[in-house]
Image 1 (cartoon, rainbow, N blue to C red):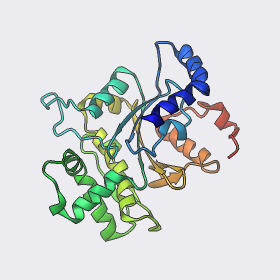
Image 2 (spheres, rainbow, N blue to C red; image 1 turned 45 degrees about the horizontal axis):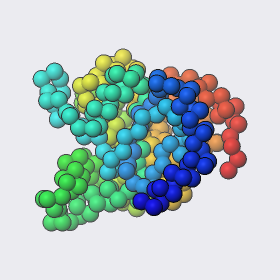
Image 3 (cartoon, rainbow, N blue to C red; image 1 turned 180 degrees about the vertical axis):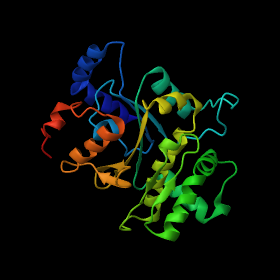
Image 4 (cartoon, rainbow, N blue to C red; image 1 turned 30 degrees about the vertical axis):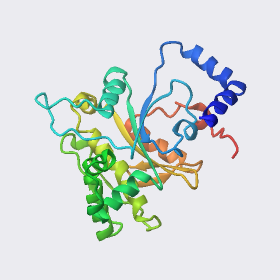
Length: 272
């Protein structure tokens, strides 16, 4: 707690006034443009590595950036009352957000645990909320990892039976540079995109083409961000020489305005 309190003092002495000015600008009417699901890992700082400002994005964090899929679909289905679908409804249906991002990362402790539970099923602890969370919501991800390890870097099919337009293929780690747990982490990100499409409250937005889901992955050791490209079928590093091609794809797929961020569009990147 001493570290937390000292951090508050440092905040007061450095960036508080800048944030207060941002609070004044948006007042009581923030209009976030995206919803991001990411991991609770202490190394993940999504508003830092996206340089988001006050009011820019909703952020939901949990162990493993998992979004439980809807067990049933349609008006007769049981209403899911967990945090993740509630956040989806709040942001998309009530807040008009058009972009939902799932961001995983390397060396994810939740994914490492999921991999361990699969390797040694007897390690499952029936009294552990974490073990139940991972086994229930990580099953499809593990199945796809097994397929990837068995077949090698061949395209994996991610199929949405509810919203076929959300289906896609992915080549995970085409050059086999990642350890199995990091392959699992990337697969997990993409599986959550399919899980999101299973929720009834989002059906109209998907059908109208006003909702777009994206997969991101962060390398916690190199500080690099990746965006999944549906056209290239793989994660692509986000950097100065890939920015234009990634934006072009987003413009084609999601009608993202190319002029949404003038500083970046005109290549006025901060040095670093």
